[in-house]
Image 1: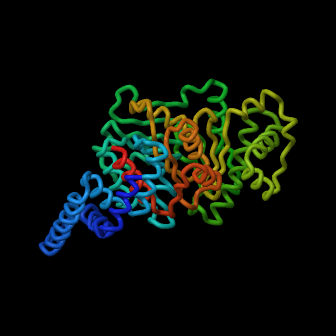
Image 2 (image 1 turned 60 degrees about the vertical axis):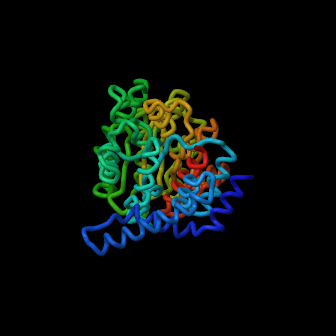
Image 3 (image 1 turned 180 degrees about the vertical axis):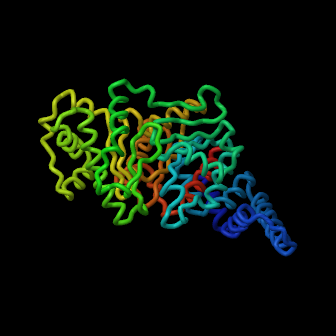
Length: 406
């Protein structure tokens, strides 16, 4: 109980909130080319130094507790201590989804907040590698991460990108391992199905969808995205219709028979209640899963059709997912005993969360608006659910956990 007693003392006897506000000001608002602004910045910095020195003198392990006060709220610090008590480990890699996790269209104008970028940089400087884990294309992710965190960090050798939900891993600075194309390991049958769907997806696109959707520029996965704002009624309509089209196209490529479309609808409706709901709402006829021939069924078993409400309809390989991509990234980074922080909001992120929980390989966190399956997973482990647009709170908690573990 000694550490709990020390935390109680820190947050009861000292104005930790003022210390943290001063630290945030110094970190996030560097002095400008103005004598007045510079004078104010210096005054705050001097006050922060005095506040930290006061804490350092009061505790035997003063540096640790001064930094705790400067970086974590009372609740974040106690959550970190609970995690330390449970696991006894520090986080040695950050695995982070981007859209609606690090950034949120509802709260952050779809930009990664400055505080989040700063905390990521601070954790990186404490030798915690960063793995961005996303469904987006490599070039898109690499571009905005360089813009947000700088070219030096992204190409440091301690930064990796799992892109297209696990089809590839990009880890600059690792020679022949810099880019691992995981989809190249798939057998010829699966690869030929993707070639057929990719070749026909725009050529056979129904007239009702032309001009309303576009094919994301992936290396391997086949993803249809709306030409409307994600989450809007228009996006919902076209993605629902795109899902049915994707299923029918997949069925025809796999079987080259008229029954193929109803077999694909039947299989994926049976495996995903959201897909079943879309097919039912659109009145799309589905066959019986019992009628699917064994060889067709086995092929469907190896291919994922993912539906993201008013966002995307996507074809991917079962063997390629974010968890497989994260394992590959950690292997390249040389992290053979991982204890990660996984932050995400969608069904594809849950696979990484399950991988972390099942092997005691880390902790998971999710924003409050995540898919229900993700929230179930997070609440069943450490209940690290945060407000929309407030990824910084979890990063501060991890910063505190690592301080307490050192």
